[in-house]
Structure formats: C-alpha cells, structure tokens
Amino acid sequence: MKYIEHKGIRVPCLGLGTYPMQGRQCYDVVRMALDIGYRHIDTAESYHNEEPIGEALENSKIPRNEIFLTTKCGFLDASRENVKKEIESSLVKLRTDYVDLLLYHWHHKETPMNETLDALKEIQSKGLTRNIGVGNFTIPLLKEAKEVHNIDIFTNQFESHPLLRQIPLENYCKKNGILVTAHSPIGRGRAVNNEVLQHIGKKHKKSSVQVAIRWQLEKELRMLVPKSTRREGLEENFDVFDFSLDNDDLKQINEMPNNQRGSRPDFEPHWDPLDE
Ligand SMILES: NC(=O)c1ccc[n+]([C@@H]2O[C@H](COP(=O)([O-])OP(=O)(O)OC[C@H]3O[C@@H](n4cnc5c(N)ncnc54)[C@H](OP(=O)(O)O)[C@@H]3O)[C@@H](O)[C@H]2O)c1
Image (cartoon, helix red, strand yellow):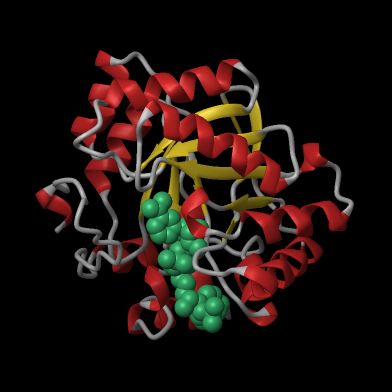
C-alpha cells in the first residue's frame, strides 16, 4: 500500500468505493477487501450501505485507527439541520464514534454554501469527523469555499480517470494543498476495454484497469476509490504497487480523448470547458 502524509494524517492512497453495493453483497465485499489489505473505505449517507460497512468493519476486528473511513452528507438536503442529523445517523450505522473524513457530497445551489460548510466545521469541532472535504467542486466552488468561507479543505473528491483527466482542477488543488480523491477511477468500467490502456498494460504485464489505477498513484497528493464487486477485481486493483508508468505511457494517456464523464446528475455544476 502507498500511504501519503497530508495535514498530519497518514492516508492509504488506494481505497474501496462502495456505490452502489448494498446489504449482504456490500458486507461480503468489504470483508474481502479488508482481508486483501484495503484500509480505506468510501461510502455516503445516500448510498444506503453504511450499516453493512459498519458490521464488516466491526467483525473484521481490525483496530479502528488502522482504517481510513470516509462518508458523505448533504446529497438531497444540504441544510444545517439535515447535515447534522445525517452524521449522527451515519456514525450509528458505521458503528464508530468518528469518521476520518466527511465530505459535502455535491454543492446544492439553493442552500448557501456557508450554511453547509459551517455545519461541517461544527461537526468537526465536536470530533465526529477528523477532516472535512468536498465532492465534485469546480475551481470557482473551491475558491468560494476557501476564500469566502475560510474552509480548510482536506480533499476534493471528483471524477478522474485516463478518459477524464480534469487537469485545470487538479492543478488548482495541487497549488492550494488540496488532496485529490479520484472517484470512478476506472471510468465506471470504460477503462476495461480501452485499447491504449491495454497496450500499455501488455508492456508491464498488467491489465488496462491496473494501468488506470497506477496512473493515479503516480501523481502527488492523490488518493482513489475504485470499486469492484468481485474478489478477483479487488485483488487485481490492489496489485498495482510493483510497477510504474514511464513518460511514453503517460504521453499516450494524455493523447486520449478527455471527455468521458460518467457522473452527470441534473444538479451538476458547470464543469471547466477544458475538460468537456
Ligand atoms: N463523490 C461522488 O459523487 C461519487 C460519484 C461516483 C462514484 N463515487 C465513488 O467512487 C467509487 C468508484 O466509482 P464507480 O463505482 O462509479 O466506478 P469505477 O470504480 O470507476 O468502476 C467500477 C466498474 O469497473 C468494474 N471493475 C472494477 N475493477 C475491475 C477490474 N479489475 N477488471 C474489470 N472490471 C473492473 C466494476 O465491475 P465489477 O464490480 O464487476 O468488478 C464496475 O463495473 C464509487 O463506488 C463511490 O464510492 C463517488
């Protein structure tokens, strides 16, 4: 596992995404992932799977301080009251006193940003989360959060993979010390049959998906949360720490189309046109 130190916290860079798994399947996959060596789990109140994740973490007997646990709030309702209610309920379901990271899932234009971010700060000051961050924030939203509302953002979790590279957003985060968390790093499956990634993979005796994951791990200030429902997938996605991509590989990836956005809810923000 690769760890990075960010704001005094040691974070396992490779996590497990858990959407849209639920119930028994989610329990089994989290147990398998922990068994393989994953120590970073990504969930959200809106995924309706915090209960099986809490049960899997408890039954694994892995000490709580060895796990980096993220949940998200405010998906449907980002009001102060609702966000505070959600974290209380998330902690009960996750069977823990705190999460390592609480993210504001997507910004809601109808809720003033400072209302939600103040609620997150309050939750953090009570010790219910160690860190706070945001999800799917564009550069203008990050600027508002930092410059107007004075929020210390641990991470921005946004879609990133070889077919949606989001370079301006990534550069803004890097310049401002914001850790990037790549969601949908396999492009929701688009990386699997991609010929360029397959070609690069052949050279390293790795799969196209392993190349997509390694591409993230080559970057500084970066973590990622791929999801697989299968043991072979979980193992393959974890088997990425014994090779590196070279400049020629990176050049080939940079020349691919850069417009394969998978997450497009009707409340999405105006993305940077350079990434469309
Ligand atoms: N913050 C947000 O708004 C947001 C939005 C979307 C996602 N996320 C987070 O990001 C996580 C990952 O994103 P995602 O689930 O959208 O997509 P993803 O991880 O990019 O791709 C998942 C797809 O890839 C397949 N796959 C995984 N490993 C594979 C392998 N080694 N070989 C072949 N196929 C493989 C999976 O199928 P199998 O299951 O069959 O392996 C599944 O179809 C989510 O689970 C969630 O935690 C956050």
